[in-house]
Image (tube, rainbow, N blue to C red; front, side):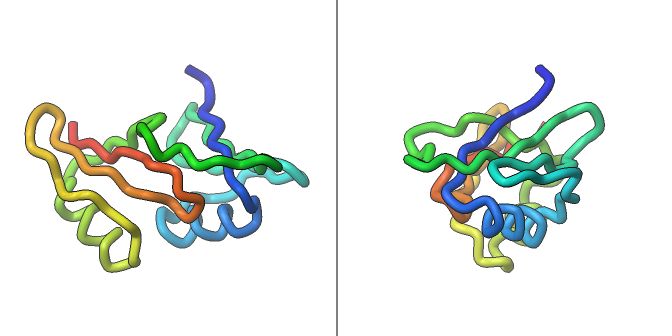
Length: 108
């Protein structure tokens, strides 16, 4: 896979949120979309959609972390909406971004 494209309702607000919450660096931006640096060789793009509907019935992708409890605590301190940690393989929780999109965080 080359890149993930996540729909958002407001590009500027979303860029700010992803930079503030995760520390992702902005690589480029135009009037409709942007690219954020999240990992080597992984494109992560936010795309402003005029008829935006949040992805709130499933998580379209996972962020992988080494220490799920620490990451969850950091996100909780920042006021991010989080589900409880679910044990199992992999250990995981979901978060909701500023647009209402659900995203999973898993520990591998």
